[in-house]
Amino acid sequence: MAEAKLYLRPIGLLCGPLAEAAVADRLALPLAGGPIAFTAAVLIEGTARNSNRRLFTARSLAESRDEGLRALLKRVTAHRSTFAGLALECPLIMGIVNVTPDSFSDGGLYDSKEAAIAHAAELTAAGADIVDIGGESTRPGSDAVNEAEEIARVLPVLEGLRGLNAVISIDTRKAAVAKAAAKEGAKILNDVSALTYDPSSLTVAAEAGLSLVLMHAQGEPKTMQDNPRYDDVVLEVFDYLEARIEAAEAAGIDRAEIAADPGLGFGKTLAHNLALLANISLFHGLGVPLLIGASRKRFIGGLGQEKERRAREPGSHAAVIAAAAQGAQILRVHDVAGARQTLAVWRAATFGVEN
Image (cartoon, rainbow, N blue to C red; front, side, top):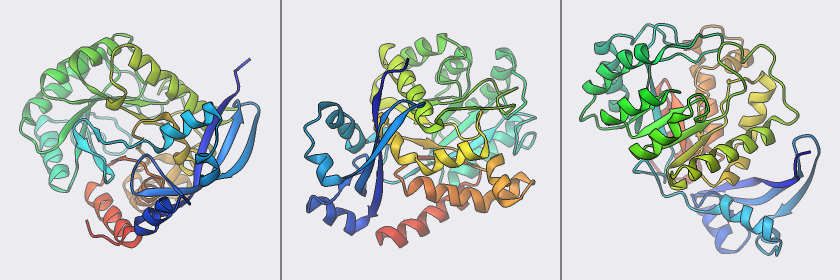
């Protein structure tokens, strides 16, 4: 039987000068130490199968003497300063480069060395802080690619990206690919299996000094969308990511170099994805930066009745705002220019500043 635990979902979010004033007056608390503050929170106690929920004001939370709650509150409010050397004062944009023939949105468009390098440069010029290079499609129904083929796809691209004015991330489940990418300058390992697919990945990440993105997925890409089920998708994903963060720390990886991704679209139904998107603020209880990748995914098409993946950008931009408004620090997107513009307008309207 699972042991009961505490979860905290900040609500009543404020931005800009109003957030600063509310924090100063002890009416709100900072969300992940950033420019967003919360005036209340839902305290969840129990397990994914059986939980109780109570509403607390920020002031009552701050005055609590419960040691477990105080420890959780500290993780929720603690400042996240940098990730992979990048400051987290504003949401970072991670641009996607799929060096594959079969990725769900742009498979085949950038599967040559020249096209992938050019696209990475375009994304950087458009404002990408991070460029995520992947050589294996993990779309629903996809087959695994052997490591030799994956290395052959991504290594020439990484070689051609030396000097790029963006941090390079390698999107892989395989230790050998991560190791080869690190030698070519990759600074981030973005693993959709949270380092469970290849047990050697933990050692490689630690030895190479890579920052990590640990993502939740239920099942393998080939079958993950067949019939995904959860008792409580939000709490189960939280528990999984918490355990993977602890495993990475045990392997010698600094918690400050770990980010967590709830894995929208990876073994989730439309309802599961919407529940996660609505509860992003709860994942600040992991005490690490949050990465959200909703770009062009099936659930956006399901809501907007849009089968054409590249036509899902308006919904993708809405997801960017939903994530940023709950304090997500990294946003993984296909359309970097559109995401940058979306964030600039949102920030100007909510914080009163221009980006």
